[in-house]
Amino acid sequence: MSSPGPAIEADALTKEYGDVRAVESLDLTVERGETYGFLGPNGAGKSTTIGLLLDYLRPTSGTVRVLGNDPQNDVVELHDRTGVLPDRFGLYEDRTARQHVAFVAETKRVNDDPEALLERVGLGDAVDDDAGDFSSGMEQRLALAMALVGEPELLVLDEPFSGLDPHGVRRVREIVHEENERGATVFFSSHVLGQVELVCDRIGVLHEGQLVAEGTLAELRDRAAVPDGATIEDVFVELTDARVEDGGERR
Image (tube, rainbow, N blue to C red):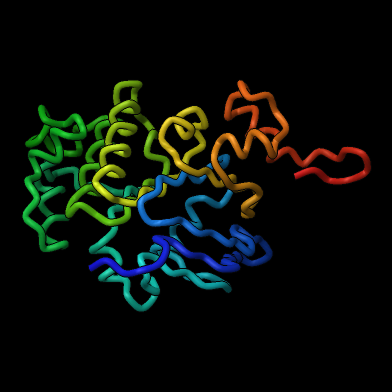
């Protein structure tokens, strides 16, 4: 059931591990129906943030609402309405791709056709193969098919391009567009900078647990003071470079 308000709202979200702050005072709003790219290098805090949004982790402080729900109190409803491709996941080596997707459909109480979903992600020829025989790219495709079960309102993809060949990367981009056109909100993290600009309405740049910039690619280019033709890699370097210039720290 849809509920009003943004798809994702985080207010002063912080996660500490001892003396380390993996996420620090994060304010984040993702509107319904947009494709939002969460950009940053490995270790920036992207996966930790996703864990906090989905109640895989509990925040040290701050608040979160996802699809109008408090993840800590409404976790079952939230997961029914959300499709997730985590950065790290486990598959059952002695279960087929079909069985994996069917299991997710059963837990969400939907009647999705596993074969159709697997065909969509490029595993049509491996529907009844055991996951233990899959390459890393095939595992990633299977996890994406599982995330698509139930036509989720919110699709959360953590490093979705990991392990994929160019054809697989292109298929993920196409699926992101298709899901967004269907009406889903898409939130995905990536350090593959060139792919982000091809699919995202807005981009948030995370650096050392802090959101240091946010906006469209054009807005980020303006903020970074780079030429119009600059790549997103150039923009990212400018926005996350912590050099000392003119006696001050630049972020």
